[in-house]
Picture 1 (cartoon, rainbow, N blue to C red):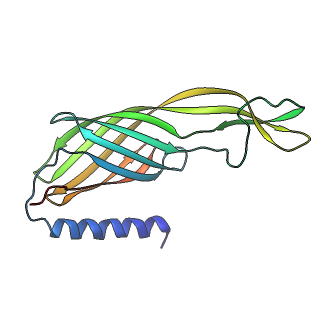
Picture 2 (cartoon, rainbow, N blue to C red):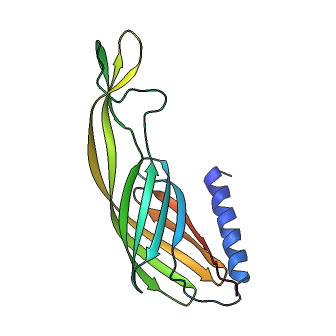
Picture 3 (cartoon, helix red, strand yellow):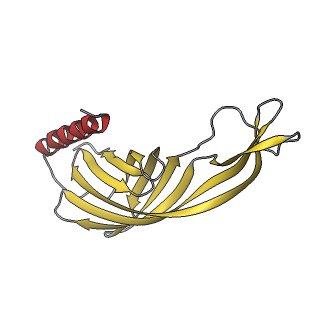
Length: 179
């Protein structure tokens, strides 16, 4: 079984246990966290979302898609160099507007549209010392769509979603109230 298959199986089993344990079921209007992997860049991501009213919400996300690891200088190379290419050098960050539909008291669907900003650098490598430098930088913007389903109870929230840029994500929240 693949790593994704094992993760999906664990998620489904957790979801079944979560639903079986539901005592007092209600739609939750508080926020949730998500973590994921995949999307356009095959990168890890994190987000936080919350409702702003009954049918709308906002989600703020980070995509850890940097392509440059190790030591590098954030200024142009002062000695002879060769161009390595354009690389993503920092996590992408963005915001999504969510549309929310409560199917039942404990099942919610949401869809979203968002925009994300990513910093790119034209990277060079010095010919003598093999060090990496940022010759120039620029920000680029990319849009993405998302969908998801969530199951809520008095104990919290568990959900599964997909975002074009952030990939498959697991959504969760824990109830802080003591009922």
